[in-house]
Image (cartoon, rainbow, N blue to C red; front, side, top):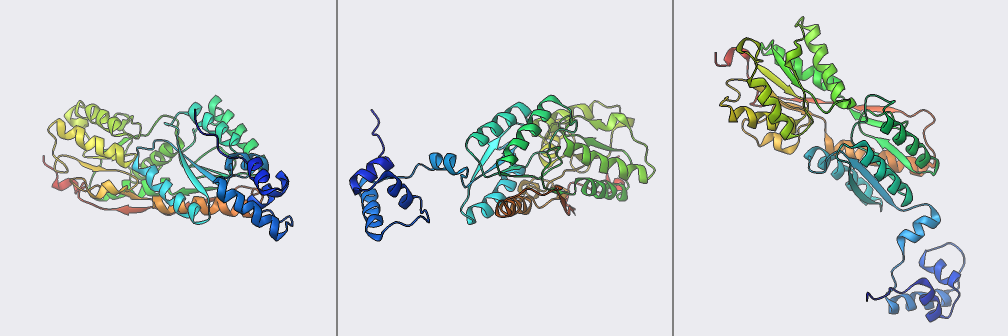
Length: 354
C-alpha cells in the first residue's frame, strides 16, 4: 500500500492550531498570523515533510502558475525551438511550462484544451497554425472553448495564423516565402516546384501565397503539376520526391521550395535515393532554419524566422496579459521579420547539369 502523504489537517493538528491558520501560513497569505503560531506551523510542516498540494490550491484560487504550449509535433525541431523560448521566459518568472503534442489533430487539441481548463492553466500558447476554414467543425469547438478559458482570466496567445480571437505574434510567412522564391528566380530558375504543408493549414497557405506572388510578379505562369502535396514531415518530403521524379523530363523543375525544413530534408533524401545529385541536378530550399539546416549536405537554403525569439515573445505576451488581468479589446497581431539564409543547396540555373 502506498504511504499516505501528510495533509494540511495533519500539520494543523501537530502544531495545535486551526486548519485555517495552518493554511494561511503554508500559502503565504497576507492574513495576520502571530509569530508564535507561524513558527509552530512551519516546524510541524518540516517535521511531517509536508508538501502543499499545488493542484488543489490552483483549483481554489483559479491560478496554477502553469503555461502550456500546444505544438503540432514534439519531434519537430521547429516546435522544440519555440518551446525552448517560451520556457526560458516563463520559468524566469516562476511559471511551469508544459508541452502538449497535438499531432496536428484538431480533436486532440480540443482534448488538451479541456484538460488545461480543468487544471486552471494560467496561459496557453498556440504555436501551431489553425485551420484556414474557420467554419470547420473542430475549429469552431476549439474557438468556443478558448472563449470560456479567456473568460476565466487565462491568457491566450497564438504564434501562427489562427481563427482564435487572441493576441498573435507571427513570423512573416508570406514575405519570407516571397523573398525565397524571388531569390530562386534571380538565380535563373523558372520552373520552381512548391511542396505544400498539410491541407487547410493557414501557415502553409500563407507560404504558398508568397511563392505564387513572386512567380506572378516575375511573369512566370503557375504550373499545377509543380504544386506537390506535403505534410510538414520528412516522410512527406520523400513522397514528394517520388512524385517529382515521375514527371516527364520537360516538366521537371530546376528548383523546389519545400514548405518547411523537415520536408526539405525528406525531399533531399528521397531524390538521392533516385540517383539525383544535389544541387547539381536540382536546387532545394526550405523554410524555418532549424539547427539541422546548417548541418545537412549540402547545407540548406531557407528562411530564418527566429523560432526561439518567437517563443520568448509569446511567453512575454502571456505574462503581460496576466499582469494586466484583462484581454485586449481588439486582439493585436505582431509580425516578426523573416530573413533569407543563402546556403549551398541552391545554385544558379546555368550551373545545373544538363
